[in-house]
Length: 240
Length: 202
View (cartoon, each protein chain N blue to C red):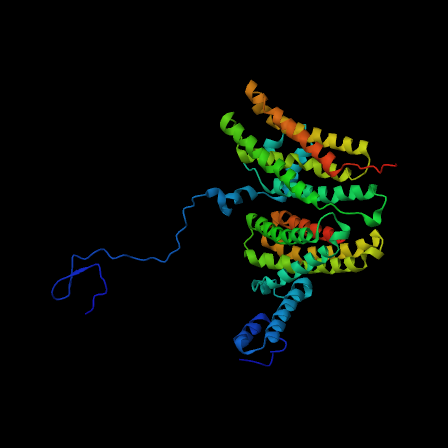
């Protein structure tokens, strides 16, 4: 009898001595213990646990920004659907609307050149404002300033604060300087008031936490300045 | 094996039977067969009357069709890029190509995150096939657009956009629970709006 490298020792008759524990091979797929829970789809599914009615209510809370109802709307269920698709809609409006606004001003409409760079800049600015800045602020608030709000609560809030800009930026297509500034100021006021009113409970704790208002206001102001001076800049034809 | 339906296979499983002949046939026959399969799927996806079995045919997904339509759209839109935009042809081609695939990926991911139980590639396949009407409008606008006023150009754009959106909305809405339908459908609408806008401004 040939012994093809068995683990077991054999006596002179070929019987097994001191049987080694056999290695069992199971073919059941084991759920991999994820080293990176944030990297799986399942982790993010908890943020899409909303219905269309909830999204409508949250956008309504954001537009009626002076009422501090957002935390009641959200409850324990911050979502990422709103921030993602509101910011993507804004990117589309910036690209299409920015080019359209320039087109309306252009005298030589036949030879108008569309600016595809608007797409890259829009993606950069809007996704930074909707995701990167709130993540940084959220981490600072949660871990340094000891807020009860989680990072994703802040991301959700920032995302919905941008919803006013959807209407504002459509109106900014009208190629009049004063009109554009007026609409952008309305959007700025709405968005900033929404953020400050809903973070007021956190901010009134002590002097340190009030300081969080400074980056919030500055980033919003920077955002509308980008909108005005890059996407909706009015280039008047100069008569020489 | 039944060869009588060889010229006009009635469904995909009969096409599968034909695959055993692969190595013996000429290249042109293989290509023609693949093209027929793409045309068959296209008709299935875009003409609602064909869908008698509620989308089961889509389980046989393929990415050749979407790739062909994506390349055709990107090439059409970059065709006159030098004269209508400040970017080069290759920039425009790259934007469109990336937009279609990343867009299809994100829209499908959105449906999955909302609780939709669908194979990832099945959904990408459907979204890719539904890009075909956008292709048609891009070709129309590219070749006759400069002779038409803006308002007249809008008509094929709106029709083709509505056709694309309508074809894919039925499938996407059926994936998710009833209260989340609009949340799954809106990104599809936005995706085709982006592409329609690009074909309008070419």
